[in-house]
Amino acid sequence: MFIHRHPYPPFIQSETERLIVGTLPPPRFSTGALEDNDVDFCYGSHHNSLWKYIDAIYGLNLRYDNSTLAIEERKNFLIDKKIGIFDIVERCTRDQVDASDLGMKDVELRDLLGNLEEYRNVKLLMFIGGRSKNGPEYFFRKHAREYGIKLVPVSEISPKQYSFRIGDREIRTVSLISSSGAANISIASSSAYKKIKLEQPNFTPFDYRVMQYREFL
Image (cartoon, rainbow, N blue to C red; front, side, top):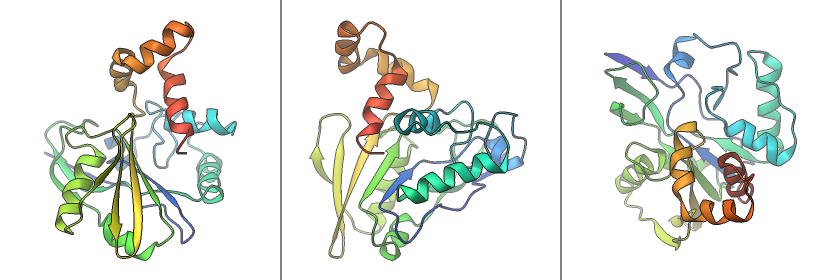
């Protein structure tokens, strides 16, 4: 059995307005066995393209390596845009040492809602990976039930959006397509993607994510 602990604390500031919410990075980030083109920071796996989509939206020309500079580039961007990262899983156990969400067992969640009471400028949670089992929204809904909080639909059109209240504040959520390559199959089979592909033959799943993420990131 492998105990998979999150290697990074939440990246959040008092001015943060939007939070990217995921689960856990691949196990090699917890064991320190990074590959050459990994970045030692949230979503730093070179198999996960979230930073490449952000790079394409903002034209950041980011580095993709193990350097301190690559980490600082990402942190500076997040601070400047008032975006935080608050992965919801603190630790889990695994029978197989892989990054599968479905492979997580004995999951221990971080207290995201408790932190939202402190970080009062947060207005939007961006779940990376939709509502699949053991995905970030799946765990957040479980977490919200413990607080007696209910998510109310705002838009059922993809990407789906909900809202909930903490005291006098309304916070919205959005379910974005997973940034991992495994989601390319579901993107290619979606009617929205097929419609654009007919009109623009060179349109790719990468372009589709950039289009969706741009509205929220």
